[in-house]
Image (cartoon, rainbow, N blue to C red; front, side, top):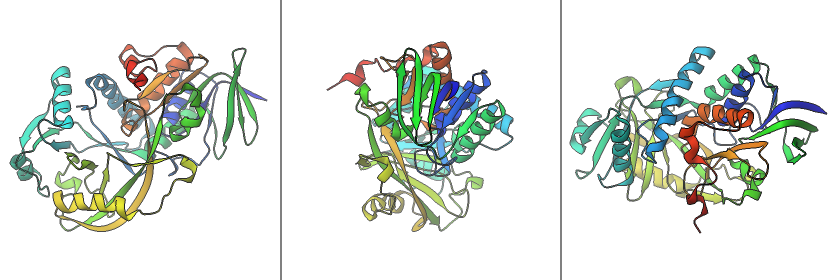
Length: 379
């Protein structure tokens, strides 16, 4: 039986980062991934993810996302690949809504530079937007997007350069802990380690079922549409965008290639019970919501779809990440419930998982993500 210091289950966005940070610290580490590298079956695919520091979800995320920006820059330098592109982000909605209030609160608490714009000012600055007069907008210049598959590939390459072992297309059947030793059984064999890291995205639900947290997996489609003008192109200065509307929260990216404008709905999503059998076909009802948003608020875009994909959100009960050690098995560190806003933090979450596994602690600024928080216990 092969033995390692640490085994990592799941080598997607966070798992690939954990693999790298563990190997960088000198641990003998095995990463087990049930699919191929940078695959399209989980939550770390679809070309791009937004990265922003004026965090409306909670100001406590800001110090972590600032670390995340630095981490992506360091990984770019190490890999030689472009992973992050700064294009700015405009967040739009009623001034009393969750997004605008939350963005301004984070900016005020952490002294972050933002620009407050009226609806008219936003439309003048970014042709292609159609906004209601009563809305307001906040523009963050430092924001941009990450090339999601490249990020996974870069972390894996860096991990392997530090001596990590990677097993692809290998499915985990179960894990157990006995007398301080972790044992993992897969469809290929068994492995032992001193520590286990679980970063399995939607597949964390069965792997962490005994925690009783109530993780929920949602189906999340992504769409790409042709545009009728160049107003939405990144090279013309069009930013990422997020709309906080009465009918839902929608977001997207500037046009970066001939696939057009990528747009999706952040809110909602059909709950699924088994990520292995998720329906990846086009759902006309889902697309109608996004296409209706495009027609109304991005009028120089068409609803001529060029591509679509399906990913998953793994929601925690309070919408915040869970980063901790297993309460019955301190040998096991995990992250779960990234709730649709976690990829930008993947590098830092991987680093904190390595810290949990090897040192038994996390950065004090990440303690608000503990399993022990009261908001996970609301009935």
